[in-house]
Image (cartoon, rainbow, N blue to C red; front, side, top):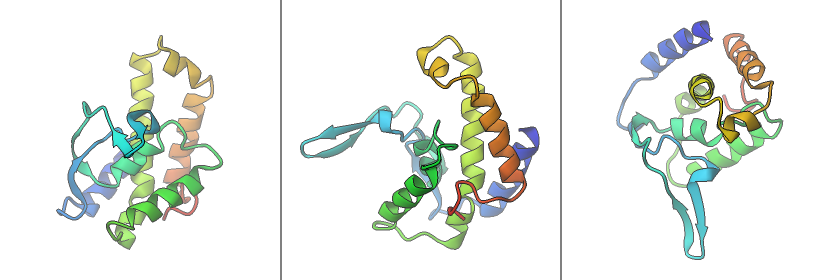
Length: 149
């Protein structure tokens, strides 16, 4: 994981913080923070809100499910919807694996400090193994989720 995080840091430094890719984000934009209302979807829980890469919100959206077989389709659907508002560059798509692995490692650390919660227990005994496998795939240069780069 340490090696993956070092590589992530290098990639993000190159990607940069230009205004079209970095700014105020929700930073925890997951299904649990969306409310369906008759007039439209509402976003809640802004306590993790701050400055970051806009594509990090996609990494947050796929949180806890990065290893799911349907993750590539979910990512592509999210990107398709995003591009109805803002076009994405090749660099925006290429940085996604780095952001996904960064978020996964961040959540893995979070599970250690929340080990007694129902949420963490629900992740099952393979959570850490999935995290390590995803880090290896990232370091091996494999598209992850498939189709995102």
